[in-house]
Length: 384
Ligand code: G6P
Image (cartoon, rainbow, N blue to C red):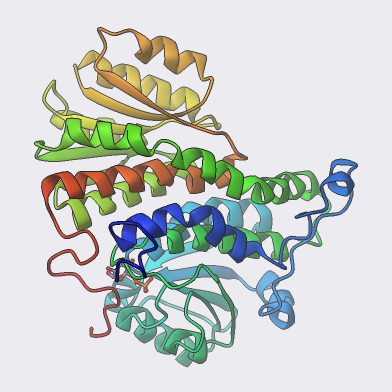
């Protein structure tokens, strides 16, 4: 098994470090800009090919809504990419937890497209939701990492994320590849839109940069081990994010609870004053995601309020963010910056989660818990 882990101590660690390669495999043969640097820089056409969707693209574009259905980390991937689908495709987009969709017996119609996102392709709740949507005549699309899985077989069409086998129970590389695939799907669905052309080209260029940006983010490994040391004895960690990075907050918190076995909560920063602020004092560790996008001014103000209450802060920000360097840089502030490279706003969640995966990994090791098989959890939950 040491050989299987390729020199790493745990599968989760190996899979985190594999992400420059897994994200490349996800895009291979699908993103035309790749390897065509000069052409693209000269304004050449970029395009996305998702063979598995080809015949259904028209039906998806003219449908009334796109509904993503998933559980756990896969659900967070759908939240991370929802805004991109809304922006580019301009039809209503819903994200549903499979169990909740079934509990509510949520209305689904013939002109809906339901997209089932599952790393394993075998999760019982997601599969049951698929049968439910199929029975109501929706177009059912699968996004899985497992060729031949139940969800891949039962959907009308789909896309494999091609991230390679994921063994650690806590999903890492599948998450980043799922966000990339949903983004590519949004690009494929908006190919006919002239008004979205510049935005689409910027995103395609951003996709091509991802392997290198992730490689740079992985260099934070030692720093994340050090920061994990500051959290080791804590009871709880609050994680604040908004916009594209609300999902990052939820996913970082899920990683901390599922593997490090520490209470953690992902919180929409816009909801802070409606409750969570009551928890904030000088004993509460808080992680905030504040990379540069249209939410940045609002996140700065959130961070100011947290600092004013003496919070012990970790902040994910972009390299060269002068506002945050000034706000958090002085040694009297209890604030550490986690500086990640910048990419186009809708792909930033893919880069931002990388140091936070490393943080939860190191926190787990320090707290002495089982990294690859957390107690009570399974890689694929195949019973309802
Ligand atoms: C389990 C795993 C999670 C995973 C979830 C959904 O709970 O422990 O890591 O995110 O199932 O799995 P799926 O294979 O459907 O993506």
